[in-house]
Length: 79
Image (cartoon, rainbow, N blue to C red; front, side, top):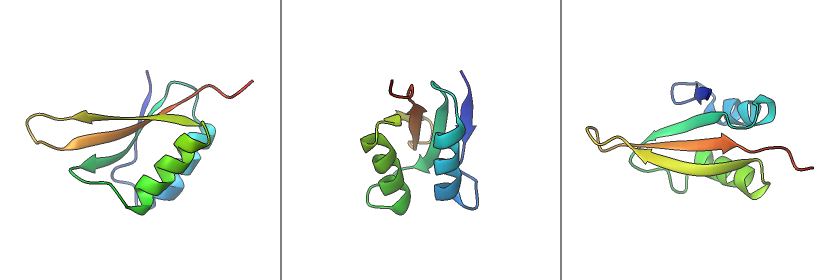
């Protein structure tokens, strides 16, 4: 399964929307790595994509660092 890591991108919100628009279903888009994301512009962009039915949102904890990876998984286009 393909993974796109946007955590070092200089324009992560723009890159996130481009990845959502152009990725195939099932692609994992890592849009943040850290402890907190709530309330940020990036969190709002991910939530908007979820609410439009474009992605599912998940997170995965990296046990050694204690950080989380915040991941959007591209959904199939509605029929």
